[in-house]
Image (tube, rainbow, N blue to C red; front, side, top):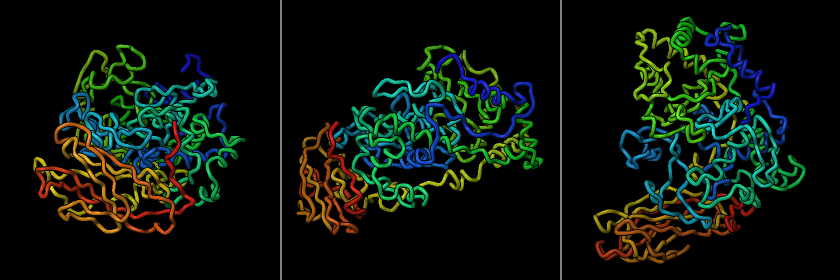
Length: 555
């Protein structure tokens, strides 16, 4: 971001400062977000951006879209994240799960190559990886001049292919949109390049994996492929990273959660209860508005507040190298905060009550650059009750929680009953452990890279994947499947061997609606009959020959 701000941003920042924290009157309601001159909004561009935002096929595994981690009913953050869920736990700096530095983040993709085969990495093996920070909200993200917790998405957006500056100021959303698409934890395969993202969208049916696509979006797509959609929006069918970013950012600028009771109150219509108004007073009198003031309820600045030891995650310091930024993170807007559990950049707190208690005791860790406003407050129980009342209903836009209006969306593949299931019992091998089968990808007709993994067998052993229209079971020998039999050698060491195999589901429409089962049979002297067996995966093939999920392009 350059040091010289446009008049649009100067006016916007002045709006943010119009609060009791700045010694002026109460701020007005939150208006529409700023739109950079380099990316004017059009209905078609917004529709394309909506399709791309919810497009799981942008990930090679077909399991993660932008919207996977940013769902409206979760306040624009990730509702899958939970403190008790191993599937949303990152081991933190020490690499050990179950220790105080654990992070409760967002599940992404298994580490995998451009061939779709899974790779083993520290902490996650060949399982789904989890991000090292809690996903911030996409709702109202359009108002921030810098994005991500550490502000690494700046305001100048440059076409990564041509190096041409497309947006001189106000392009943080465009920069942010490209980040997850090449992040190997979130969506991408190892070695993915930003300038090849568009190749994934060539030859696929838009939102083929989704269900309940909003009628307006379906009507606009009208059965066309992505090259045709890009041609309508941009004048040619070229699908480039820059165009993807411009479209997604245009859609995100419609996600303005600015119809709350607080906005109505600030607009002159009394909408808060007496308890909520008392909570608002507690909020201002205890410096909460210093970082969470203005119309947006965020100063968009970076602060170390003592949620975790300063060196657990250096935050903003990694971008600025300024010691005052060690462990500092951007203040999130408090709009729709009640929907966004768990809280903080590491997802440490489950409830708003815990958050209020944290601030009341002045944080839990200290450092020379800790914000001095984070200090014990000694709030009474009544003050806490009032403050919590203010943080909930007055700040919640019901369109966000109900996913209506601009927040209406498709249902993701990963939210449906089309997701592969793991069923039945296996046969234990070495160490008395049953090897583990993994199948998470969409069984869409035409998917020639449906990946099935196995882990927990003897390294160097032969593992045969048998797929059949009935469960091949545990017969004491390796059965013959009526769909496919494939053998692979387990990589790894000791009894931590692993492998994965890609299955081509073909394009025969007769397979649609059919159920397939698959198991791995592993040569293991410690197992009965010398064969350890996984549980079975169960899938029902969906789709048709005109909605292909192809993975046969090269990078």
